[in-house]
Image 1 (cartoon, rainbow, N blue to C red):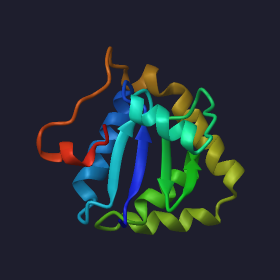
Image 2 (cartoon, rainbow, N blue to C red):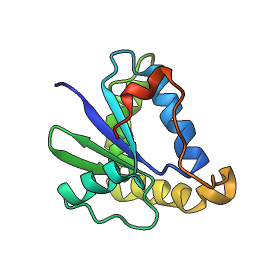
Image 3 (cartoon, one colour):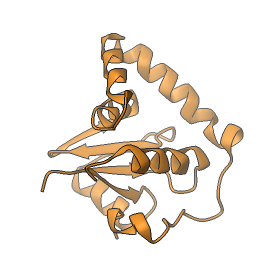
Image 4 (cartoon, rainbow, N blue to C red):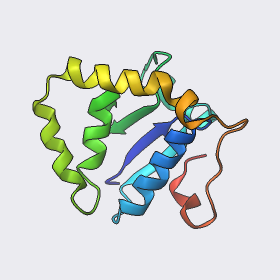
Length: 132
């Protein structure tokens, strides 16, 4: 199966918005999703031996490899419709600098965008794209 899994912070409003953003632009239904807090998300983290820092909001699992921070987002945009794949040129920016920006946004995401009391549940239409 040619697909990848995006693990996201299911209580973070910015992260939920990001999943909705991906769903609208992923015309080939390449990405499937699971909340980091869900049993499926936790199982995948253990399976791939991922130890997440507190600032992590997204993890991409693609072809047996795990990507975090800015690398995950740049890889996700490569498969989206429209002009979004052009963002992959940002890979020329040194990763420590890219990750510093990612970590800064992730550290402030709850304060800026809010937090949910429970994990977000997708509407019926894209529900088949969610694991577990």
